[in-house]
Length: 164
Image (cartoon, rainbow, N blue to C red; front, side, top):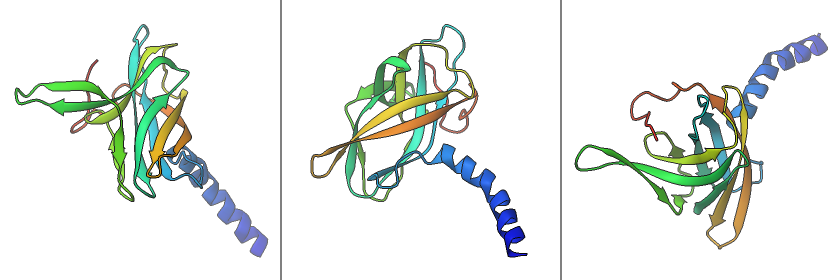
């Protein structure tokens, strides 16, 4: 009876564990946890796309770089609303990650830009990213992330959606 219960519990939890793998993408010992990493799928001939996620540092840190074999250029960008009510995007050199506070990379704020893509990013593709984080003591840590490509319309709700 106990074996049957254990097997039933395992069978019930297995899909949850598989789904969780897509949403937490940092090694257990990493000082920064990455949640829900994804990239926006592209249409043929589109040369850029965005990557989005949530970052939570265990101690003060700073995101100082992102790299990916999926694009020739990878930059950290910020979207801001100007006084003229026009959204503007600019590259930034880094992003502070205060200890214990989730920092969201979204389509309407800070995000990662993948520019000059090597190929079309199709829904369901897995795009490798390497985040470089500088810790408070000056040491740098690389975090491998696998972001799943989601549909072109994903994330176009409040505050989301912009064109490059």
